[in-house]
Length: 131
Image (cartoon, rainbow, N blue to C red):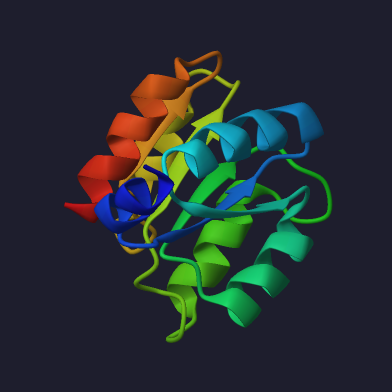
């Protein structure tokens, strides 16, 4: 059963980035059950190092984080030729950030969720990215 799920997910690697460990753990557990390979990071600098080293297929990224916030990390990713094509889904507890996130056309995200969100909704958004 797990092998069937892995093949359905194509063995895709996802990095979940949030300064709240419980959120990273919860999302990671759910996505691993769906067959994805999941890594976690708890601040923007740790996430950037993992992205450079591991080249995930997708980043699920919180905006409000220590050391390097999610918006600045996304800009860094899009400015780097090795990481510019990695899709990013933003998750945030701050309302009305969609306009700010979407303001720069060169720093796009593939989707956006405001906390609290339904984990199944995130899963559906991830599946849509990999279609």
